[in-house]
Amino acid sequence: MNTEFEDQALHRYRRMAWITIAAVYLLILVGASVRASGAGMGCPDWPTCFGQWIPPTSEAQLPSNYQQIYAELGYAETRFNVVKTWTEYMNRLTGVSIGFLILLTALYSWKVRRYDRSILLASVAAFVMVGFQGWLGAQVVGSNLQPGLITLHMLMALALVGTLLFAVAQARRGIMATQSVTKIDPRFQKWLYIVLGMTVLQVAMGTQVREMTDFIARAQGEELRSSWIQAMPWFFYVHRSFSAVVLVSNLWLARLLINSLGWSHTLTRFTLGMIVVICLSIITGATLGHLGMPRLVQPTHLLAASLLFGLQFLIWMSYRHCRDSALSSADQHRSRQPV
Image (cartoon, rainbow, N blue to C red):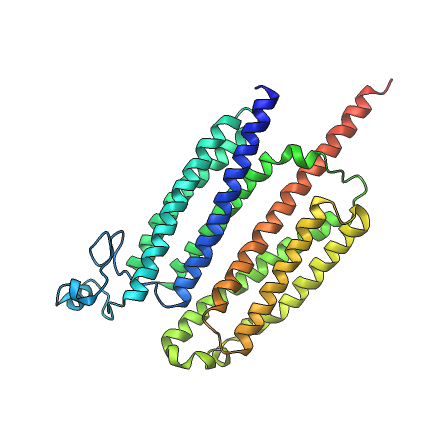
């Protein structure tokens, strides 16, 4: 492949992939907002909404016995609410739009297949995953928002983000090859794996807290929202306290990078961005815990956790590319030395 053409194709692919990743994060925020607002069953059927491709705008547009119809299908408490219905419908439209963006990303990856075949494979995998995610969304609606399926739906969204970030990182491999890590603190790699493990643990506990929140909400009702925290089990308090450990560990990681690579290195900038996201997660988590679980804060807290996962995954991939490039250069240098 011509080098100039390859560079242009990679640039176009990276731009398209970044747009798609941002759109996926938007969908995570929108989906979390739908869940927090209680609009998840605003459309009690899928892919239509109240049996229509374009939802009604008033109850008068529905059959007079629509509640009985849906009660027989297992949705006894179905009641048309125009705000909740259109909130859920816009969530679905956003998901469909992202499906098209991921398709475009897969098409753009075809032109860079000779540079790195894994970019094409990851992009196609992301397209398949978004189809599965759509099917899973239908199962969530069909189960009347069963908590376990909602969590799986969220984890699939993170897996989709990870797949796209892998493809972008592979497309940025040449960029990271110019970033020297020969002077990096030898403790960095160990600490990177430690903070990655902490994030996985923290997200797992957060998922359990969210499941418990749904259980308490169904048991106590929305009107007692401010008392939900008092009904939380022990792992909620572990999750809340562990956030300080995560923050301190990542600050130490940033210190190692700043002292060894400086402020301008890409890995340092990614890590500082990660600390900002952790601070946002802690602030929103504290707000939820001390101010009665306000609705609008829940989606922001979930988005912060999702961004943290994405940034740490990108840091890990970028570091690997820097390290592999440095090792490759060292091997080439040794091979040129006279025996």
